[in-house]
Amino acid sequence: MRRPRALLGVAAAAALAVAGTPSNAAAPSRADAAGEPMFGATRPAGARHLTPEQRQERRFLQDAAASLRFASDASKLALKKSKDPLVRELASAILREHESRAGDLRWLLHVREMAPPMLADAQVKALKVLNRAGARRFDRLYLEAVGLRSRSAAIADAERMATAAPDPAVRAWARSVLPALRDQFAMAERDATATRRFSRGSSPHAASRTRTVDISTAPGSR
Image (cartoon, rainbow, N blue to C red; front, side):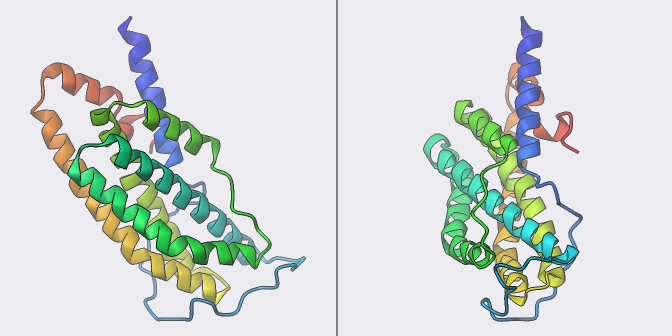
């Protein structure tokens, strides 16, 4: 009877790992810090012919909007379910950033006649897993999926588009979100380290349960 439970734990962890990483994520590179106006030139909304760079820019905006919504929804769950002050601090920081940046992102989508995207199937499944998880298990999964994987992928995308996006307004938005994303990733690393240290001090049974849902070792997480 224990094997199905372990397999379910691995499957849930894999769903969270996939949800935390957009399909176009790439290795981080240091973005240019030069300032540009947030609402600079934009491409005509009805442009019929898009260059590969413009298509990449639009994909970045779609992924950023979905990632922002996923992290926001997961963080609202964290404030409801988690009792860990470090997890709650991270969730509050993510929600503050969502409130301050979402309007500009919606505008960048709007001028391209792009609707805010729906969550990917993997993100929807990940939210369901988080919603069903108990408080302690929730903390581990949230930190891995949202704090580490989602933030890492968002940093990589923003660093790349801060210099590569054709539209200066998109480059400016990408640069504007990087400081908060880096802060959130650093917070998640600190919190995950504290959580692992706590788990090592738990009973052998608790440590075994931790391994079955460890996102970093789940199939497809690398």
